[in-house]
Length: 143
Image (cartoon, rainbow, N blue to C red; front, side, top):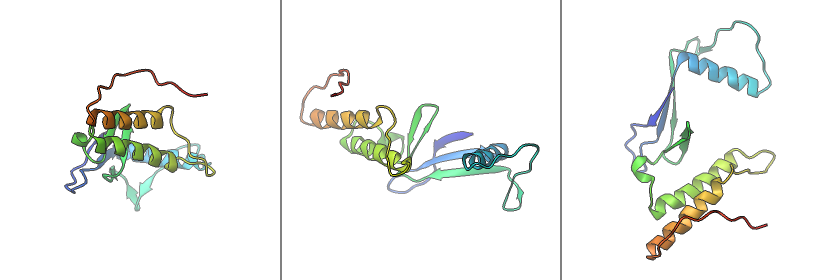
């Protein structure tokens, strides 16, 4: 499987491309079945559109992002990730979208520190923009 920035040329960014071999697509389909309580035991043939799948591709729009092996691929492109207020705001939006997409029974759950980190980076960018020196400090949780 290869995760890389897409080749899109929209004003919003290139998106992210996830390219898979046919075997990886078949494994993904098997994982989908298991996630939906369908368990298959024994040899199987997985076809896509009536034929064996040689390759597959998932394209993530510029509004989205992918985390692969701990590396974040922002659909807006690598140059859009950084220290600008715009990207800091986008990180907060991405964290909220991510929690909504993973909501279960109407309960949105943030991954550990995801929203806190995004909000902290956002606040730091606003302060830097005002000329304030920002030093890293441990995140303190109110109880």
